Length: 315
Image 1: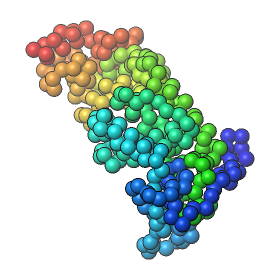
Image 2: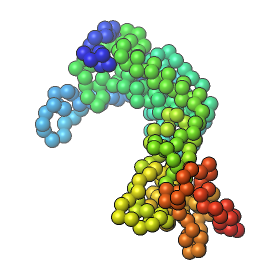
Image 3: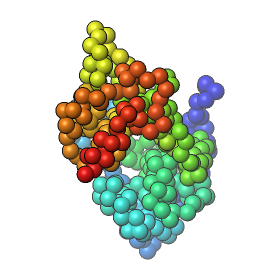
Image 4: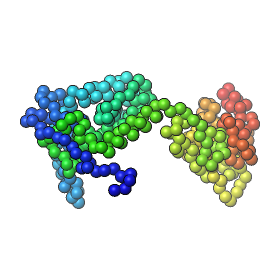
């Protein structure tokens, strides 16, 4: 086994107990739940042997009925409450059902390692889902039955204790994810410049503020005919990096040229969408071909009259 490889699930002893005649397993933590049961959860998955067949014909999966224990039912209800308290997050997730699934799974992940965290803001809820949801889905008791029944899956047993089935390496991953969540919550924006130094090839700005966790891919590499951004014609293209705002301008107009530069000015100066005059466009050059060596502290600072142009466009 390589040094960084996870041990297999079978290397961790999983304690289980037989289900009583009327008991159901909790689909999240796996403990046995005696009647009366609350909401039932039907978990469907394909038997492993069916998946292994090279046969396109549809086949019925196996359905296992589970429920939620009182503690996991509280997590389900808390997830619903959090979505109601953060409607913008719910809207970003596309639907209430998707949001409920993601938030509940993240709360399950916290419960599996005995952790909790304040969730008072939209940002804190987004970070919770980003860091904990995938692992929360993976460690549920139901994960061994869907989408495929695993080799060890048995529908006549339950975990002897809540989350007893979670393996050592899964707990390690959960703790690492939780540490990442805590670090993300205390992040502060830092300035980041293009990988090769200098400035944005259009607006010339030297740095862009971003959270460390979002800094990867902040600057977008691009190449262009220098004449397209106000330089002299050349048989060779020039290469550089676009800041996020100039990359957005390029994406909105579909190419890197005069219209993208115009759109960049509009975005950087928060101007209403309005075309610049031919005279104003004549003097607009990308920083990379402007002949200015030092990058800009502020966007488009290498164009001497840019503030006047911006003020004119506001009028």
